[in-house]
Length: 464
DNA sequence: CCATCTGGCCAC
DNA sequence: AAACGTGGCCAGATGG
Image 1: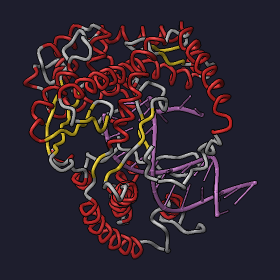
Image 2: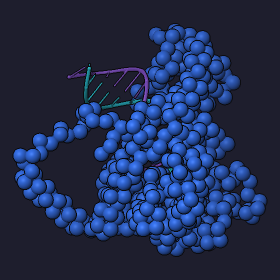
Image 3: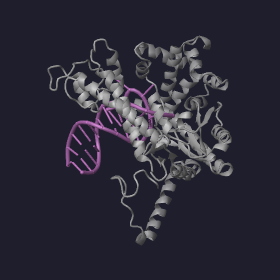
Image 4: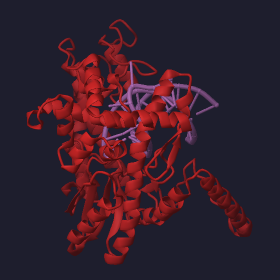
């Protein structure tokens, strides 16, 4: 496989190159024996359909995606990098002059000492209030720094400066530098690896480099997507499932409230807020909608009142978060029942199953440790929903690959990002490919609620 | 020097 | 061990 590391740079965790030739026959025999045993295990575990209908057909699709790679505008990367490095240099100076002793802003350990040590300790610190602990000491993560930055008792500029420093350092180190280093100079393209066996739920993962976590949330971060550019004469076509996990929640639970909202094409967070806070949809405030959105996310991840309260922010107590959850469960009885059934199911069988019958063992379900068991319960819910969404898009990818090959042989699938597919198509075909992509994704499964797919085209990833 | 762990943070 | 799920990568720290 073409790889960013090139030949000769082998990693410690790779097996040594095989001395194949003299042993070829023996190797083939061993390989066949192992394959037979693997397949018989897959059969006895009831995973034959997932294996033969999804995973095996997906192999050549992923292989083509890896070999296709994606074109990178290295000048764009370099330009952004220069800009951010100038800002980082300034921030380093400002941080140095605001700090009582020379410290490395890339070191959470040193920062923790600087912020939280007592003034008379060694090394001396600012004696700020510790609000969160890690296994080794006081946390300096962004949540903590944001609170410190707003705290009127904290007279230091450091929390704010470090937050900004970390943001830019992340973008330069993890993306601008690393992506440039991953470009094959001969082709100007990056070829990541996609892994079919890397996750517990059936999702894919991506590595070297990971192209499934390119920034989008902030403006400076999203700008990195400008460096992903379609090949000469080609255009990017992208499509993503809207609210796919909540739609699976509606499908499995058959909850009338949620199903109707999706059937009518309503703004789902607004619809849920209207129910939970017992107001008309038009009367839902931004704050209520945002709270409902967090509850929706929470349900999919396996909610706790504690976690919800933290995410809702300082205006909400755990008690208020509990009330909101109670109201949610009362208004959406079907969802409540589904959550309970998922947990009961996992307790009985020891595993969680997705829509295709893919299953994940959850040994924590029977643990004596309550925290461990609670984790198992969240996993039981999340796996059904997340894993089913993974099944859906894999089926769409297999069909899309066939259809593109038949109708637009020059178009090719480049990336999958969990609920999104990115295709590169000849510019003249882009609109037709967009329709094909969108319809293939939408038609990959028939659920009790309609699937909605939004799509776009553009020469750069940032344009979509 | 290398391998591994940790805290932190990017995506869905 | 799990205080809301799934991943991968970075720099620093640690230890052989």
